[in-house]
Image (cartoon, rainbow, N blue to C red; front, top):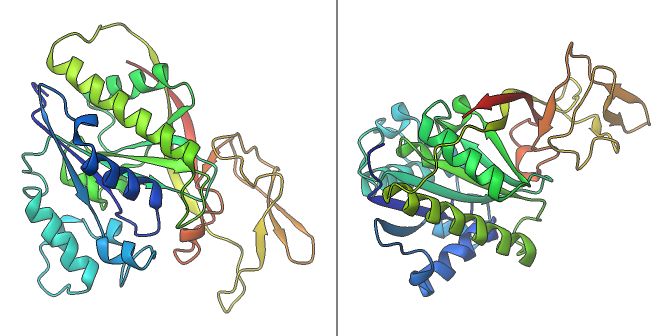
Length: 292
């Protein structure tokens, strides 16, 4: 990337994730907080209709509606499918958008802390930004999930990414996480300003990256009913190692179900409330170290 000209901050993509939604409202009320001299910063509210009723979505998860084939499919006509097409058009079109960076602000009921979800992590710009955030905010975790993120709103922009913060309940504001998210956004904008001014120091560093492997569903019976819960020893332990033989689930009658993989993995989005309907108990990642 030669120069950054336009950045879009998005909140309310999910109507019951209040951290990003109310940050966008704050930035719209106090626009000087996000303005920088060398590029334009715009705000965008993803799903206002779902936000009005404090629901994740009205008909369909908006953040799963941005695959190119779906955006180009004229037969898709739910509220969120139409909204996705409108957003895509307003932001210039996926793959050809004049928006350099889309930053989508989310929250999660999982204990994800401050997490950055990257699309195009292999690009040096993304790696350098992620490494900078890891240094300036040591609690930040960086996750790469390209197959998942390509269907999300931020994928309209080549260098889009998402911030996930948690644990925070749905349709609830947590002041500490709100302030941490705002500070992280501020750091990102300051970095982009420094990038345009050519004042980013080019020093080698090692970035810890959590690469998405697959989703794990809850144990279910033949009727599709959940038969076990996240094990107490795993609950709230996002990004911590899960070794072969470690307990994953606890059945309703008290029996342990252990992880039967062949190597250590690092679960994320453990017991995310919104993922019950998607058949996801957690995502598994592998820990990598990338030289930047």
